[in-house]
Every structure is written in structure tokens, then in C-alpha cells.
Length: 307
Image 1 (cartoon, helix red, strand yellow):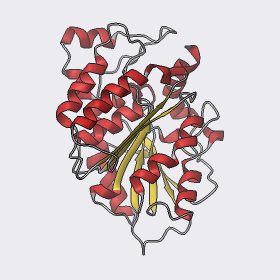
Image 2 (cartoon, helix red, strand yellow):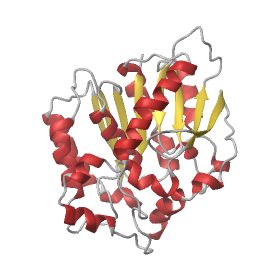
Image 3 (cartoon, rainbow, N blue to C red):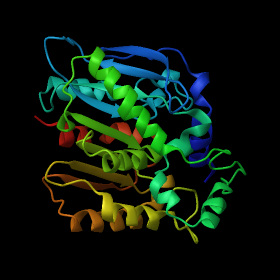
């Protein structure tokens, strides 16, 4: 329990500590330091451009959360990283996917949980339940929300109204939903799901890895998952124009997810999704870590970005 809760605890404080530019083995990173926003606190954004990037070509854009954990393990709190640049470069080299860039959005430090927790499902709960959730703690006694109110609607406004226009103006991108993908793990999986539901006209695909359906860190008398499922029932985007990817392991924190993902899958299937636009996978024995997500990242990328 302590190990995977430490993942969340330390990630909150990695925002300022590991601020050096990441090193990548292919392509290069362009950092926007302290990207200013009218909706959320400023944060770094690390844009990965593939080898041979050229304004003469157009690129699909992959937006990824927890940007400080994506590229270089020497700059992360736990010395692990998605190594997303390696995976992306190899897939493009093998011509399995469209040419794309990665926009790594740093999380908001102590506000991470509040920014990534889907707001409409949360606010659908009775006020007394919301208050109880705000008082929830981790096993070490630390508050889940660290005194911050759920603000994922503002976080999504930052992505859609400020960051995407900036990226589309500065880089040679394909701007349509089919070529605008969003991805993340754990709470990042939740906010990716929420993003494609709230802005189906912006995002055409979402990769939700090790999606943290519990919302907090206990399951007994926890109303959060059902609020998410009720939201999905009425907000899933049109399967004719959107693609969804979900997965989880079975170890550490991921051990909580199997029955919840089955419930989500039932809803997704009932809304008309099939193998052409939806993938859900289980990875027995895999844990809740960047190492695990790196090992299978090529699967959602190939599914969502294939030519």
C-alpha cells in the first residue's frame, strides 16, 4: 500500500524539484517554461518533435498528462519514465503510425488530483458526499485533494482554449479531432476519458491507461466509480467518429481496477463501440508504474494513430 501511494504523494511535489530539461534518445524537446493560463496555474510544457521534423509536413498531436514523467528517467522523482520518445520514434520508423508530436503537460503539483478528477461526476454527488471526499486521506494521513477543490473543467479549458491554439499556431499540425489524441495513466486516464467526453469536437481519440476509477484510495462505501459510470452513460462520444483505449495491470494499485473496468467496458459496448474503435486490455502481473506503461505504450499509440 505504501509503495503505490508514495507514487501519488511524491508526484505532487515533483513539479518544481525536477525542472531540468529532459534528455531524449531521438528527436528533441522544446520546453515552454511556465506556460501562462487564465484558468490554471502556470506550468511547463515539454513538446517532443521527432527526428527530421519539418514545417513542410503536417503532424498529428498527442497530448499527454504528467509531462514531467514522460521522457527522461534521470529527471523524475522515482527514476522511472514512460520513455515516450523512444516508443514514438520506433513506431514512426517502422511506419506503423502517422507522423506525430507529443505535447507533455506538466501536472499541477499539489493540485494534480483536483485538476484530473472529472468535475461533472463529482458535482453530481450530494454536497455531503463531496465534503466527505474532500476530507479523504491516503494511508499516510495526507489529504487526497490537499485542500484544493476539484477544477478539472478549468484544466480542460486550459488545454482546449489556450494550449491547443498555441501548439497549432507554432507547429505544423493537423488540427482536426481525428489527429488530436489525448492520453494519460491513473488519474491521467480519468482526465483523458473526461476530456474526450467533454470536448468530442476537439479530441478524436483517448488512451486511458490504468484508469483510476476509485477516484480516491478506498473502495468501501465509495460512490465515486458509480458517478463516473453514470456520466459515461450519457456523455460518451459518437463511436462513428471517436476511438477509445483502456487497460490495466493486476498488481499494486492496478489490483483495484479489474471489476471497475469491466463495468466501464459494459457501458462502452452498449453505446455501440466495437473492435474497430475501442480496445480494452488486461496485463496480468503488471503494476502501477511508468515502467509498466512504457512496456505497453506502443499498443494504444498504434491503435489510435495508425495510418
